[in-house]
Image (tube, rainbow, N blue to C red):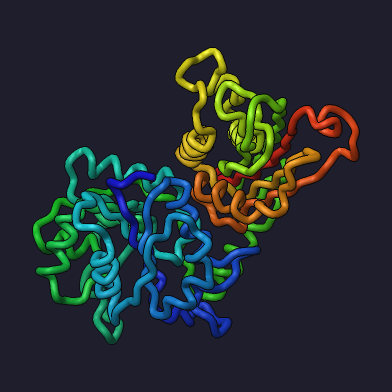
Length: 391
């Protein structure tokens, strides 16, 4: 988890222009809400999030509670800038960089976020993704008379996520009292240097019912290779086995389970964690656990395998992947897995920074057949499913 950047995700506002009687950020887009999909960006980036909502209870139910990187859900204000200010109050004072993003933009990519972060790291006070304008833009009076035609080569349509030095953004909110349509305008008005980075035409803001209908088609229409439009899905299989050796307890899923014998291994012999690590590496195309943590290296001797899982999950997220689900099965005659299932699941989910509901742990026997049936060891199998926007 990176501690130098926090994000404020704005889920306040009625959003009723989208129709349906429910704010657009809480409406379903495929099998998940718009808010949940917007939060994926920050879960993939390992970035702590404050969600700002008119109704925090609804925001939690719509996906905030399922996102492992959401730290707080706070109540928004009357204006957009009031909601951002409420979010800023929930961000620790020592965090140097803050990202502001609209929950109604569920298709933002890690590339957009990283471009903004890079611009601020290079010295800018703020960075906003932007698109060139192809249409001619005119300034008109309330009754429709043209006052001026603007030079479109100097105009840009801006998007979120917007990235700022936290100190500059806090100063802007303290000094700027007039209404503003985005935080960049406030930073500009109070002397900050804001730059633009390349935006993404697919990073649309969902406002009207037609926007949601188009987003639904985009999200669910299948490509010839089986991926959803704009979304790549990849699964990986992991399998591991360890023999019993020495005294107990047995280490499984990061939990010490009482047993008369433990598992032999160069590290702690956690066969379940090792299977999940291999599944993650396979799904992301990153090799296998033997390459990443070779048993020839003294560094990994007697190591806690949960640390392996944390490292690999962080690498997978850094590549822009979201971990959708992990399904596992542990094969042994003893010890019994079912009494420890929930605690194992919670430990694994915490290590991977995902909601426990995305992890499934099962136990089975081999009906007295084979090495597990003879009580010689334990085997485990895992399947991990990753998704990533933009292929």
